[in-house]
Length: 194
Image (cartoon, rainbow, N blue to C red; front, top):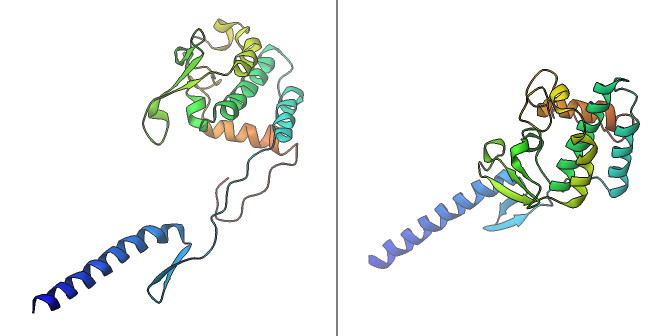
């Protein structure tokens, strides 16, 4: 009787473990169960990234884009967008993390950047090294008159409407002023938001 009970318990535990594993793995939709074996049905698609050549085209496109105003404010927006996209690319930030950067997050003496946790999905603060290249990119941007263009905003990348540029606006700028003119933008499939 005891052996039979142990066997039933083992079978139930095995089924329970298999069910938990399958429900967790079904999320990826790459696994199936056949003849009590877990089979892998393919690869997850690895996201495509821009090549160094594409990044150079993007920076060149920002600096030569004709969609910006032809005054001081247009020059400021051009530098803002170039610095914002460079920050995302060089530091590997999420768009909202970059958009919400403040002047106080930068320590140029220690060459560090503090990323605020409330702007990312992990909700954890982190500190990143500030590359010299990014500091050099910021130089012409920081030479712009702060009272005139930032209007007292503590954020590094201000918007005309808000204290900081929204991730949605950044997405629009990136798509309309950079990717479309360079023919790097591909229309998303139906049902996927852009």
